[in-house]
Image (tube, rainbow, N blue to C red):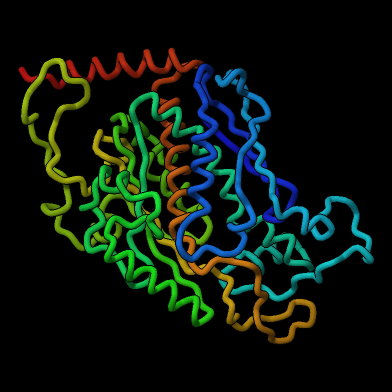
Length: 400
């Protein structure tokens, strides 16, 4: 199986990730990793931190001469802002004369501040917010960029698009195809397929900024060319929909996840919801894959926790960011007196960035399921198993 851990703080020296389980022999495109990290920093409504950092991941092992060796892959992403925070975030014992920033004692409603301080017994909430910060997701994107390169070996590609910002939304997200999402221009402010809707989304963010507020929204990740048969229904923790939901819910500020029609499925009759199964339009005994037709994809490519060969569609719903420039009421934990919440450098809206992080998490979960299904300690072995599965499946569903 694939697994990874991340470490490091928002203003610490660096972020670190260790990725384990990648088969040997995978050629790594380091420029593609950097490109994904750059995408995470984009999107209208991002804060000043994005102007400071220019993220780049350095592989410290597990790769030799451009190819994975099968060993764990440690990744290092330096924080450029570290030079301004060395005294505050030093790992050495603090000398009171060296403290250049006061302790954070006023938790922000909606953030990890209060819950983390209670759980770990911290008096200075900076111990919480530095690790709970969405800065950590840069490490996840680096991991996901490698997972994507493994998925490309089996012709699986991933894209995303922003569905809504605040009250402004696309009318039917499932009408957006993988090709539509992939074709969004690189200079799109919010990575939305509809330029007119995007303009109104920008206005929504501007209104929030002008009032010292923040705004959330939703996004959808689409994976195309996903092999059928990934995941399982035989145990609760092997269901791929559950694994994907946990992965997306772990993205900071995401409060809900949908697969296919998502919550809208609850309002439909079964005759309108379930995707009919039809014979191939043009039977071909040599075609690889199921070859069956599904006129709709309301299930989002998953049935009973198993991929069915259709595009995988996962949506995430992100709450507004917890740091407001006009802060909400809170309590100073040092005095227990009502006080305005702490203000930290932050974004007005980060839905576009969250979509990129979600792509990385979907890529990781699918790559893990791929290795689980087809096995192999090397890429050639995995591909041999995958191709044999495709041939068997095509023969089974060939017209008779």
